[in-house]
Image (cartoon, rainbow, N blue to C red; front, side):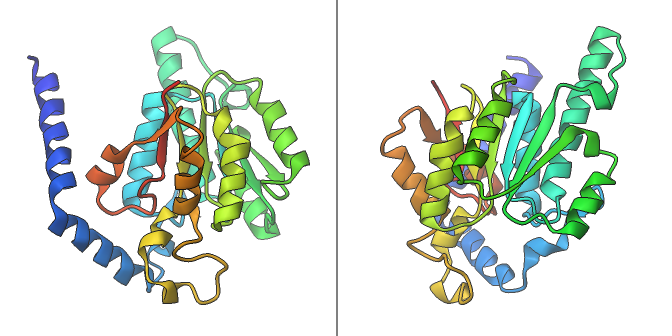
Length: 259
């Protein structure tokens, strides 16, 4: 066994032990509950744009992008654009790697790899900042409800041009909305890639944490994921990701397509 294989085996065993450690799991949920009261996820940015994610999930996202090497990343929910910028910057690194390996030069404006963001309300100041960002040439934005038939049709038409697709769902967090997004976009996920439903953590938080929101325990992305998986065996929850992260907004939300 090589040193690399030995290290990977050690990491796998670490993750297995963490999955079995109920005290650590409980502490992680307590930490999430307490820090969410202080809007902890608002504290971070990616290349200058607020990302509104746990740093742990940001690391997981870059791992997935590097592993899958998608040609298109579909994201519902744009907010300040940090997640779009993260995805675009990772696609830029993939292009750079391809260029080094092939001995060619890639013009970012001609790159075939793209990020497609959908949001019902792209606020003018956020759109301006995203369009002025160095990663802007890799980003396309669509304004409209992610579950509106005309928006779904438009996204599917764009996706038809890309062989490898990764999907992130992070807009309205009600059960019905996320389930509709899963039905609309999860099928675009290519085999071996992921559809990630963010903020499944809502199911594990106290109901009083969401007094001004239409979602909460019993009505959130995690309940939508559970419902979706009843009739879509081609997807399974990759629990190894949440077990290694411990702190994540997406427990049961990292869905891998196997066929």
